Length: 527
Image 1 (cartoon, rainbow, N blue to C red):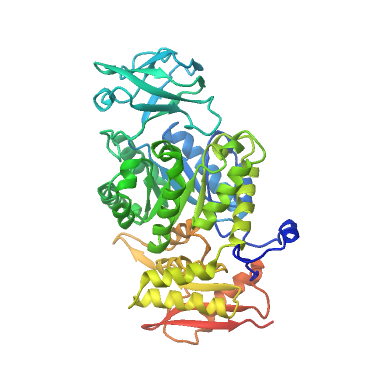
Image 2 (cartoon, helix red, strand yellow):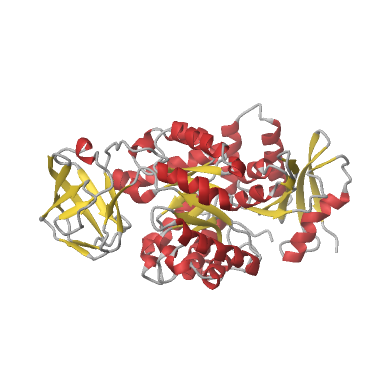
């Protein structure tokens, strides 16, 4: 299983670049989040997504109703059973998103240098001269010369489906703008983004709360993508809200950084959130182009050192309509992996794209190639130095287990866990081999009935780079009372052998609790 990792800093034979990659049970350590929608409603298509490498399904509530999403989710559950591949569910909120409402759904043609009025009068019909918006405070926030962008997917590089406006004047509640580029807006809803302007809208809207407390509770969502997170308080309020919704107290909150305000408060947001989504669509508009890469590298480094998953968006936009990514996009995916991203999020490509399965497969292949040249040794040393001394007990065990696995060239690291925390700490050090997280269910009660925990923890590993969960038999305790509890030690290796991840005579590093102690074992598998 263990493969030789090349380093970009070392000479590489150019002919070796063309050698085909060897097939692996885990095609890529980097995870792929796919957005489900019109092109991915059927069990057959979703099964294709799972087989191609999608491990998290995103449901975007900025469009369409919960009933439509529920139909897709039921098909996702059927696809999971059919393919026997785990998949987590992410609910993406609308948040402080301004939208243009095109009730007629007729295409709107906008011509460069013409004028268009943005109005909060929702009763008006959208035309080339007038666009109704869902926010009546825009005129108070805008002034002459400010920039506004409108489109379904803002500025992908082919600027015929999104438009750049410059504010000419403010008239009462209306904002009069000059159109800077010709474009055709098609569809029922368009996102409106006011560049570098603070908009007084709540991060978790009443509509969001309704969706989370109904659809989210019904489906026990694994992740909440908190759109337009601007302050740490946004995350705290969302967590307090979830804590009152039954099982959703376990839901992980991913703060979506989409504008300058979120960027300015990034460090405090990272402390509160369970993970970060770098929403490069809106953020790429707020930032000067020459600063985008710098934010990405800085943000991913901070997430990596904090041991919190980081997700990068908007990498292969052109594959929405094309079978192959551009050269720049292919390089962008690889750089996201080399920068330390845990997962790549696909939006329009899988929501409405013409080649969604091919997109997931292509992104996975690029990620896999980038992982081969990821400088794991340098990353490990950098992380250990950042953590400093004295380390916490768990951090020390995790770093020691990864170091041992590297030294003995282990095929996998096996971690027995109940909460998933120990497994995430192992993955934080980015070992070159997969980490098998054996989640041991725990018996719990709400004083009315007994149930087992563990499913949440297993699925929530599916967004962490290099971490692959399996839900174990609850009769195997996560904390053994004996260092020779062979039944516990056999669980993951037997599973690994059956799946083809591990073979005879491979070395495996095992990490588990024995009584009050944490033990790291190196095991050589027999025939």
